[in-house]
Image (cartoon, rainbow, N blue to C red; front, side, top):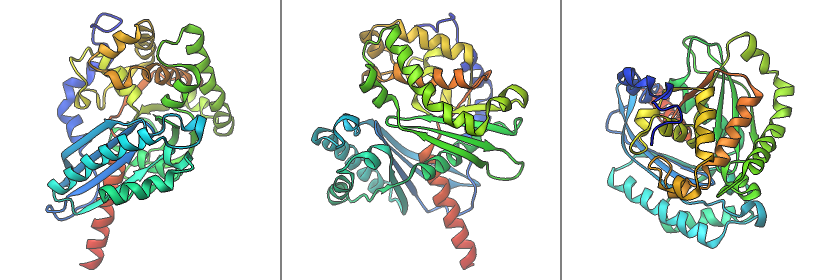
Length: 358
């Protein structure tokens, strides 16, 4: 299937510099012993993700990864608790993560859980079960730490040509917004952040994601827009976009999926969308294109897959709300986020400890 405008659009423009993007994807700070192997698990409302990497020069090289849609937070907004079926799916996925870590002889690790476990009344009991059955200990991190790690993870994708950047992550149960300032030679500074208690899973449950009509889609957009009002009123970001050329970076599955659909990829490949720039016009166009598909057509699309078919339109609605709130020429797509931030933190901290001991 071709993109809505009949071509690859701006999303494909990054292919001419894939070598540079590949270097950026692997860039981290810190120098450590090359035999160390690091692992990070990000357990969210919808996905369970693992990344295993080893230091390589001043960066890291990914040696194994894993991602599984588990829908841990399905129904939590309504019942307040994780369901047995969701917990079973998640434990099975985490067992695969544990096996991969053992196989790769991981020496240092950190694993985090986010909105679903923060919100569910049985979240603590579930994490005890995870540790008992898989050996993995997960930290339930607060939204501010999630925002900081996400910013760190996508740091190589930030455009130094602009001093200010809005980074957003449309997750399963929440949406994080990070307002950052770039200073040459320094890590990005997080000036402000907010966590909205809505994501693709919660929007789908509240408004319908399987076959939403135009009115339901607009209700999702307005739902998110209303939640953005307080952040904009306090931070006054709009003037930075209008007068100072602020940029946007999206690190969610929504923007990576839309970039892949627009580029007409035969299957989703994060290496081909990571670092690309997609114009606002193309993002809105491909969102409308997907909205005009049937649920069966979205399930059959190679870049969406069955597990995300009912979540992609809520993600499009959340993205459209962000684009309506802040005028931007487009979004830089980052397939990096929380896992990469955790790895950067692990490697950097180990390097500091090693230097102190030396």
